[in-house]
Amino acid sequence: MPTPAAVRKAQELGLDLILIAPTAEPPVAKAMDYGQWQYENKKKQHEAKKKQHVILVKELKFRPNTDDHDYDFKRNHAIRFLKEGNRVKAVVQFRGREIAHVDLGQKLLARFAEDLKDVGQVEGQPRLEGRNFHVIISPVKTAVPKKEEKPKPPAGAAGAPAQ
Image 1 (cartoon, one colour):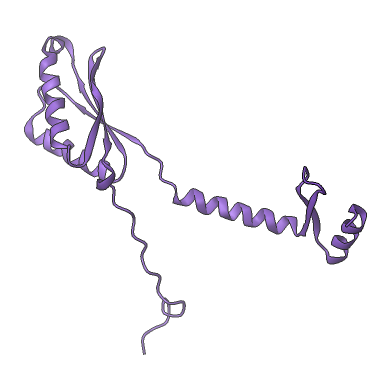
Image 2 (cartoon, helix red, strand yellow; image 1 turned 90 degrees about the vertical axis):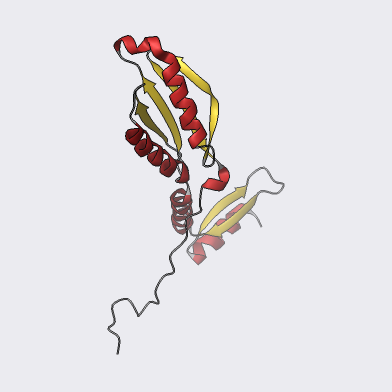
């Protein structure tokens, strides 16, 4: 159909003529409501954005002489973070003369990685940068549970009293 006739036909129907494939021979156009198409496209993008999960890096700080209770408390937090699908960065901070005992920090991080091996895997070796010794642990694919959708109540049952 010639372009002027297609434009006239679309205007009669109250629609817009939108070029779909300009490089095709002959060019392909479609008559539709452009505002409605934009609205639906925006809704689809919003729904897709809702379903995506941003992976965060959660940081836990230790000292070379961290006590057992504090260690267990932070380990439990790390397990929770990994099960949520986030990565964990464990950092051992050395202050003052503690830097002479880097081996204590290395043992602590090795113990931490060993305790989390069922829910996380170590990304690379522990590294010493300045006065911080750190390791990054990412979640194991099987440890990340999928979110269950709650069943929605029937439309009329929410506010109506039972009779």
